[in-house]
Length: 283
Length: 312
Image (cartoon, rainbow over all chains, first blue to last red):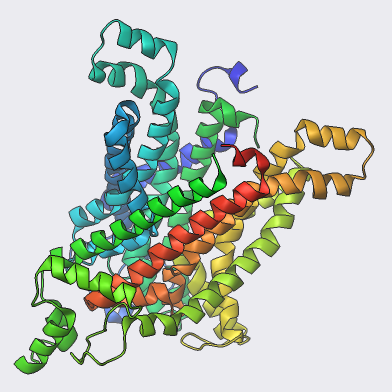
């Protein structure tokens, strides 16, 4: 049914997911510009701590009297930057590593797969924590490095598996027969076939990165940016017992994270159903 | 291939992965700028105490010797000493891990129970009534279970159960009543994943020929669903349960943090913060062993449960 509607036909839920991610992207790009308060200026007004919603502060204020809505928008900027960079680096490097391992096989494949085994021998977030904990105040580059350190593994495993299935195809054999170089075979004949599944993984990966980054910030070891959603959640948790408006402050960044992860999953599901014919009869 | 030789091969690559994880941790710890003795002893400790801690951790020896001595401590079962005071006769790393393991195991079991009890009926019902309001509800529940961050859900659960209802004890307490809220928090996330998985494999299995045959020969619907479809649909679900159980055992870090519960994950995060090398090394080793072991067990269970896999 989907096929009949043309190449780009996606289910309504996938479009909903894409729209949700578009809202996130817009908030990330425009957020700090349209935010009602400029948070780059240090401003602490304890008299306005945890204020209720008002015309001046639509979503109230935090423990230092800063505007919640502005923090949310600034947090969207850092979440967008971080997740785009991490997903881009992880997917490209994973795709290349997996393709090389699957195509050359032998010792190359063995080494790559042993590294993959090691990285999968403990939960990913522990490795992320271990890396960011190497310095007292991890910056954005270190957090990105930590998330990429095991981020590529999933992409590489899938790419390798697909290359193993593709390498015996007639058109690949034909390319080898006419003397195409390894590079040409990988770039022209293998990787184009891997793009679809990689895009599906990237969509799910975006949600995963947002969650892990927020977890790190929540544990107090995230990128030491001024405003991240995880750091907002951590602040809210510390004041949870104080007033009713802390609860609003706790829910706002949580819902923002939910929004992005939900959008990423809906889009990922839709893309997978569309691009992977094997999966299409499911669900 | 005989199942024995597969087992040997898998054990071998598992051991290699565990060794690799230990080496990786070891490498990382020694890349860390800053003196671990400063963290453990405090900046103004007398030189004697500092020297004792350094000797206890083996920092006065070369890196290869340090790694070999760590492996020695793995063999003798102590995993090394904590070295907090520099007293080599002090409590061992194994003792510190053994102290928190019961809490971790209890939380993992309870969280898993919550997840399985809710997810299986939900997933099966959704698959049987595809497109109904029940299916939509199941999809919404499982999607939100995946998307709602634990960092929001767990504190609000604590607020509701402890402050508003006053039914459950607050953080830092341990005991049978105190595990309820953390188990719900852990289980809700798992439940979401399991329900999705159960639904999609049930939908697939219900379309198989053997289910049609079972219906055609006039079996009661509940027999078809329970004995013919569910048994087959459970295989991928068991895989997820197993793998997630492994990650729960290695610590539900966020949940332990919110509820201030002792546990393996909390111990590891604390040890990383205080740069306690022997504890970090030991905890990573235990986690890697659990993880690799559970993976292996899941694969074996899979082979035993499904004759089609055994040949592969």
